[in-house]
View 1 (tube, rainbow, N blue to C red):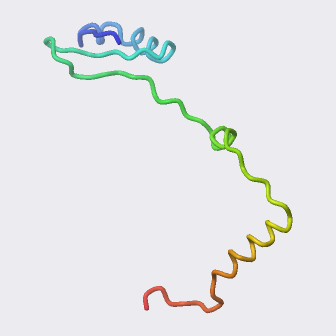
View 2: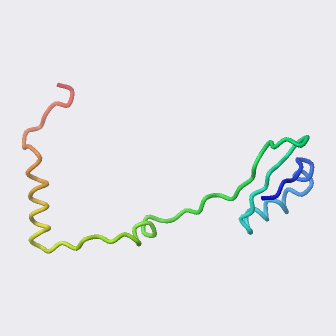
View 3: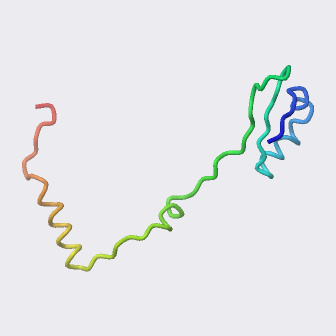
Amino acid sequence: MQTISATELTRNTREILDRVATQGETIIIERNHAMIAQITPPQKTMTAAQALAGLVFPILTLQQASSWLQESKDGFGDAVRDPWA
């Protein structure tokens, strides 16, 4: 982390933002030798497919899948109930 003055940030805004964006550098801004701000690169994001890629899902047989589906349906009643009652 580099510390710079608010004046230096004003004079070199583009170069400092380029360093944050390209090098992932964090910059601390000081005014009168007191920290007033910090410029950091954003957290890296990933797609849902990337997040799920590392997970290992159990593979169900057709019989296991049918049994699971039936058990999940058995938990629901046929009657429609009033949620405000």
